[in-house]
Image (cartoon, rainbow, N blue to C red):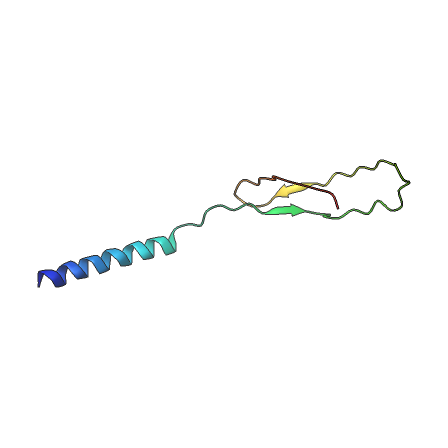
Length: 72
Protein backbone atom coordinates (compact mmCIF):
# COMPACT_ATOMS: atom_id res chain seq x y z
CA UNK A 1 0.00 0.00 0.00
CA UNK A 2 2.82 2.43 0.82
CA UNK A 3 4.51 1.69 -2.49
CA UNK A 4 1.28 2.44 -4.32
CA UNK A 5 0.89 5.80 -2.55
CA UNK A 6 4.51 6.69 -3.31
CA UNK A 7 4.07 5.76 -6.96
CA UNK A 8 0.88 7.82 -7.21
CA UNK A 9 2.58 10.82 -5.59
CA UNK A 10 5.50 10.57 -8.02
CA UNK A 11 3.15 10.31 -11.00
CA UNK A 12 1.14 13.34 -9.85
CA UNK A 13 4.35 15.34 -9.28
CA UNK A 14 5.60 14.40 -12.76
CA UNK A 15 2.26 15.41 -14.24
CA UNK A 16 2.47 18.84 -12.60
CA UNK A 17 6.04 19.32 -13.86
CA UNK A 18 5.07 18.42 -17.42
CA UNK A 19 1.93 20.58 -17.31
CA UNK A 20 3.90 23.51 -15.89
CA UNK A 21 6.48 23.27 -18.67
CA UNK A 22 3.77 23.09 -21.33
CA UNK A 23 2.01 26.23 -20.10
CA UNK A 24 5.05 28.34 -19.22
CA UNK A 25 5.45 31.46 -21.38
CA UNK A 26 7.78 31.09 -24.34
CA UNK A 27 11.07 32.88 -24.27
CA UNK A 28 10.96 36.27 -26.05
CA UNK A 29 12.27 35.99 -29.62
CA UNK A 30 13.54 38.71 -31.96
CA UNK A 31 11.88 39.21 -35.36
CA UNK A 32 13.92 41.05 -38.00
CA UNK A 33 12.01 43.22 -40.47
CA UNK A 34 13.20 45.21 -43.47
CA UNK A 35 10.76 47.12 -45.72
CA UNK A 36 13.04 46.85 -48.76
CA UNK A 37 15.51 43.96 -48.31
CA UNK A 38 16.95 44.45 -51.83
CA UNK A 39 18.25 47.49 -53.71
CA UNK A 40 19.24 47.78 -57.38
CA UNK A 41 21.93 50.38 -58.07
CA UNK A 42 21.39 50.08 -61.80
CA UNK A 43 24.47 50.58 -63.96
CA UNK A 44 27.52 51.74 -62.03
CA UNK A 45 30.75 52.77 -63.73
CA UNK A 46 33.75 50.63 -62.83
CA UNK A 47 35.38 52.06 -59.72
CA UNK A 48 32.27 54.09 -58.92
CA UNK A 49 31.13 54.18 -55.32
CA UNK A 50 27.52 53.67 -54.32
CA UNK A 51 25.76 53.67 -51.00
CA UNK A 52 22.37 52.60 -49.70
CA UNK A 53 21.01 52.45 -46.18
CA UNK A 54 18.80 49.52 -45.25
CA UNK A 55 16.40 50.26 -42.41
CA UNK A 56 16.24 47.24 -40.13
CA UNK A 57 13.67 46.95 -37.35
CA UNK A 58 13.18 44.42 -34.59
CA UNK A 59 9.45 43.63 -34.39
CA UNK A 60 9.95 40.88 -31.80
CA UNK A 61 10.22 41.00 -28.04
CA UNK A 62 13.74 39.56 -27.73
CA UNK A 63 17.06 41.26 -28.42
CA UNK A 64 17.99 41.30 -32.11
CA UNK A 65 21.71 40.73 -32.49
CA UNK A 66 23.21 41.18 -35.97
CA UNK A 67 26.56 39.41 -35.87
CA UNK A 68 27.45 39.51 -39.55
CA UNK A 69 26.34 41.29 -42.71
CA UNK A 70 27.69 41.20 -46.25
CA UNK A 71 26.81 42.56 -49.66
CA UNK A 72 25.92 40.38 -52.59
